Image (cartoon, rainbow, N blue to C red; front, top):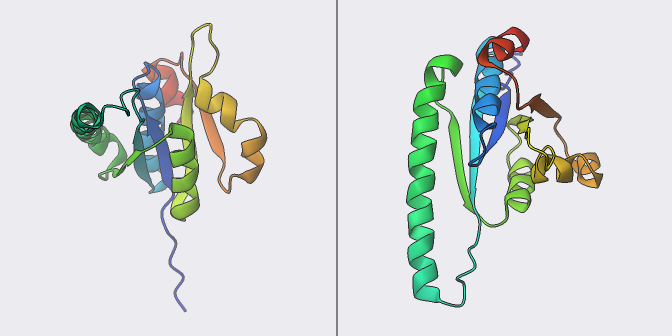
Length: 158
């Protein structure tokens, strides 16, 4: 009987932070070294304009287009490093809720990769949240990459 092994899927949450590049490159290199794949999640968060439905709909459309353009650029950047086109998820809602829902819904996701912020405000709201009580409920490990790594340092550890 032949056993099929699914490739590891390294999930990266895409946002507008500087350390995103570190997380993406780490995940891409790990995927390349392990025969895995990279998955990218971008969450379009609700705006403050919800009481102005027409304006909110237009703003949502614009955010969706921006998300798709960003994801396309990241996919083009990752493909040569990872060796495979990333899996792309674009969702609407709150980042942490959509992340937890995606992990629960997609059994192929095996590792969550986040890069820690380097500013005085700490590692970032998602890392702070996920390393608290919700960490016990996750079914996958979290890899937190220092956001201050250089690409050379990143190559050495991935």
